[in-house]
Image (cartoon, rainbow, N blue to C red; front, side, top):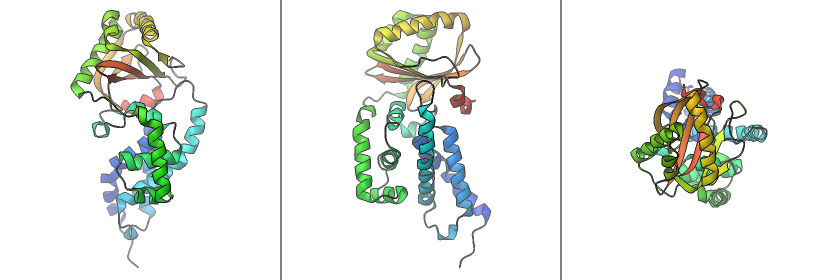
Length: 286
């Protein structure tokens, strides 16, 4: 029997794969902290494994992380049933390589069963064949094909339909910040689509709308009410950036906390506004 490889070699093999494993875990869970926990647990299992017998470390670790995430999703779903207000995934910045997995798609993934989510992500996003998907989630390839197909049908409307150039999108984000904070309602109105919606996640930790605000008039009314608050208390733009595949910005609000705003843009107009205010989900940005 071959000797177990030294500890240093295990870490050396694992570390280059950590970013890929984090992408899988985060797409599965929508939480940076939980994704880090799953990847760390995979590392512990990797170091305990008989690594001489592992022919494909990346496949082995991806399977391990996915299975850990499937278990984690069961408890995460129970937690989200008691979550205060709308639940959004943690904001992740500048993931241009995963342009397709935008914030609206991440929210749509929440409607899927854990197995549908895994099959869709592994096949459609990460490009694995159904044989590998089957080996990962312990279902036969035909079942995995059905799981991915059903997932695809459920989230079709959340897939990006319009490509926005990064610099153009960031320019819109900066203009939105300026208009919304200064109270330039005419400029703001010119940016919004007729069916625009606004969504905020405060998690019960900071004030936020408990339901999405839908429609041009309703969003404009909400923005107008915020202007007085911004004028009195201030709001500082830290930087415009890509947030979960969407143009947006990070700001520091009057209470000293960070806030992210991501904008879904269609045909040059803002179709949806996603605001993250829950400090627990912003901690990793510090």
